[in-house]
Image 1 (spheres, rainbow, N blue to C red):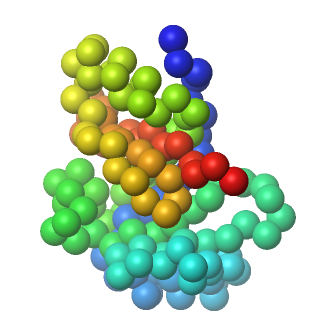
Image 2: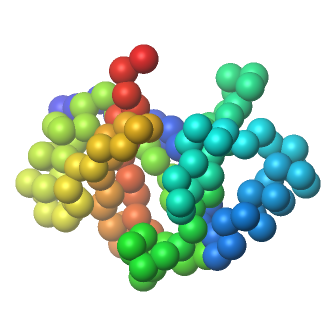
Length: 126
């Protein structure tokens, strides 16, 4: 069996990306990471090396609005054996999405019983 996944990343889904960015930077004092930005995403850096990586994602038509509404969060479970877990979960009938590859790593999601999406992530080699 593949290694046990652990919580590795959190995304807050928002209706206004810039307003939310302002809140998290100006009110909470988090440090924005412009290198992580895309048109629909803002990331933050953790200067002390503590805590989970964190980002904001704008809810849009391309980002599965039925599962990701403003005010919801998405958690990413880190795993070293992404392809093995994908194969196992598909074999067990969990209906994983295709594996996607982005700058922050490769990932896929599966629906949980209550409709949340649970995402498994493999960060890029450093």
